[in-house]
Structures are given as C-alpha cells and as structure tokens.
Length: 489
Image (cartoon, rainbow, N blue to C red; front, side):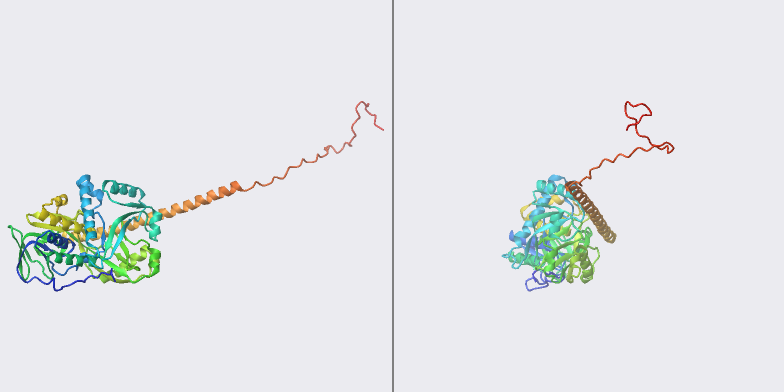
C-alpha cells in the first residue's frame, strides 16, 4: 500500500554501506535526514564532492515517519515572528518557507521519484469559534505575505468534516502531501545519482572544526572536509553535545487504521491534510479508505504500539461515527524543538554549519534549510543570517523535558476546555435561534389568521317599572286635561 509508513524501514543496501576507509571531500554532512540529504543533493548538483554520514540508516527517525504535509510557515506563529524581527524580515522568512515547500514539490514527481503519492490542499481548523481572528489572519497572509488562502466558514468546514468539534478554517490550496518514507528514500537516490556518497551505520564520534580542513572521526575511518554540516537534530550525540542540548526532543506517533470502506468518506470528504490550530491532531485519508492520524506529542520515548489506543481514542473523540476504527500500525520518531520555535540554520563558525530544530514543520523547512546552506557554501548566499535573531538557547535538559511534558498536558487540557465551552455556547445560540424562529412563526400565523366573527349585541327588552311600595294599588295614568277623579269610559 502506497502510504503505509513504519518506524524501522529502510536499512543498508549495497550503495549505502558503512564507511571503512578514509575520505576527503568538500562537504561532510552529519545526519541522513531531510535536511542533510537536501544539502547533499543540492551541493552535489552544484559540483561539490559530498559525503553523508548517517549513524543508523536513512529514514529511521522522524524524517521518514512524517505525515508528509508541505506548507509555508514555522512552529512559531507568524505574528510572533513579526514581533521578534519586524514585518520586512518576517516576510523574507515566510518566503523562504514557501520556497522550501516548492522545492519538495519539484522533487516529488513520478519522473524523479516513481510511485510518490501527492495529494493537494491542507485545511487548518479551529476548535473554537474564531471568526474575527480568522479574518485578520487571512488578510495578513494574503496581503502582506502573498500567500493563496481561503477562509472557510463553519458550515463549509462541517460539510467536509462531519463533526461539531471544528468551527472555522483556513484552506491552503497550494499545500500538499507526499508519502514521507518514499520521499526521503527518493531524496537519497537523487543525491547518490548527483554524485554524493552516503554511508549508513557510521556514527560520528569526534569532530575537530579548527583549521581550513576539518576532521571527522568515525569508529572505522577518518574524513577531512572544508565544510561540516551538522544535520543530525537531537541525535547528534557526543561530538555536538552542546548543540543537541539546545533542542527539546519531542516524540510524535502516527497510526493508520484498517480499511474503513465507504463510511470513512461519509464522515471525511476532504482529501488533503487536516491540522487543528492547537496542534493536537493531524490526519488525512490514505489509500482511499484508511485514516492516517498523528497523536499528541510527548517528550518521552516509548514503544510505538503503546500509542495505538490513544490514537483510536482521538479518532473516536473527533468522529464518533468511526468509534470502531481499528489502528493497524503505529510508528514514530523524535523531532527537535527549539525554545523559541524557529529552526537553527546558519554558520556556527567558519566552515561549521547547523541545520536542525525544525519542529512540526519539518518537511518544508528542512528542505529550505538544506537548499539555503548548500547555496551559502558554494554561492555565498547569506540569507541564512535572517535566522540569526533566533540564537541557540539551552532547552533545559531533564527539567526542560518535564516542563515540556507538563506544558503539553496543560495546553491540551486548555484546548479541550476551550472547545467544550465553544460547543456549549453554540448549543445555546442554536436553542435561542430555534426559540426566536418559533416566535416569529407564531406571530406570522397570528397575523394571517381570519378574525373571529363577532355576535351582534341585541338591545334588552324594557322591563316594566315596579313600584316597590306594595301597599299602594297600581293606577292607570290620568288622561291629559281630565280632572282628578274623572276616569275615561
């Protein structure tokens, strides 16, 4: 099946064996993830000799287990980027992220990567009624950041997603999804075809970045290079411990259901990726009738199968109609999240480069970072300096992981409470609307009903006046002109 990803795919092949001999190269890339392979591919295309050292195998971590959504943006909200660097630099940073997504789209073709599956569109939905905020964000993205977006009202969102959990949405028609595992292995194949040499099961145990020619030590060989690119994220280990400690390791696990048949399309009509604004859930349909769903994040590693019940529970919560959906497979990996939410891209010292900390937006931002660093080394492109305000910040070690876990739990709890309150208010408004509609209908019927016929009032018959003095006999009236005592005949 084209979209099923597993946690431990890949492995050694004849072209990506362990490094067992000394090598000289222009560029040594440490880490065979999305960023490292993009550096290797672009640098090799530009004529440099490149060696990639991967401690395990290509695609073993988060890079090979992504849901595969490419769209502009960073983990840090754009309004916060503006607050940090100003509007003009924020525009340039946003443009770089758009270029990253475009780069992925240019590589993910059937000609370059046979069998790659591309689906269009991404929908960011809110679990609260956020109409005013939606309008403001749409105007900013469209006018200031030249991004094609559409605002979806509640009815339009719910026509595509049959749940009362979501309200408004922002639709990105140019966003897209790829099969994450096929993409990273396709990237490695393209890099090799361009001339890069990739070695798996080759951890780096030492780095000497002084001098013009830097030295890299592995368990079975040594390597010299003019430039070293550290693209190993949270897995760099001892040679770059200080760099690794600036990243908070965050694990995210994703699962795929058994085939659900027609009932899935009855519930979810949207064919692209769906992401909620609180970053709790992300899902999309794959293989026609299966649901791929990413679980909430955690700062602690665990066996993927333990998260199958949690993923099934989230599906049940959002779509009760899919309560019986069974999770067939679960995989996951660790991403590196920076304290400030922006990736770490640039030159640490002459000839020593870093590309890490991509967080949840790994597909497009890692591609952007790889392309940017390759061009910086070989062309002198200095746009990496746009990331200089987001310096390396210690992530807090064990304390940071505990704090991150607690903050995540609090955020999810707050999101759930805000969503419950929004749905309660919506029910109240609906009841009020129904009550007003009934009142209007009652008034309308009252205005069109024919008037009741009135019964005419008859004048009462005059009653004879009674004399209350019963001692006096009743007399006939005396004719006019007659003398008293005279009667008529």
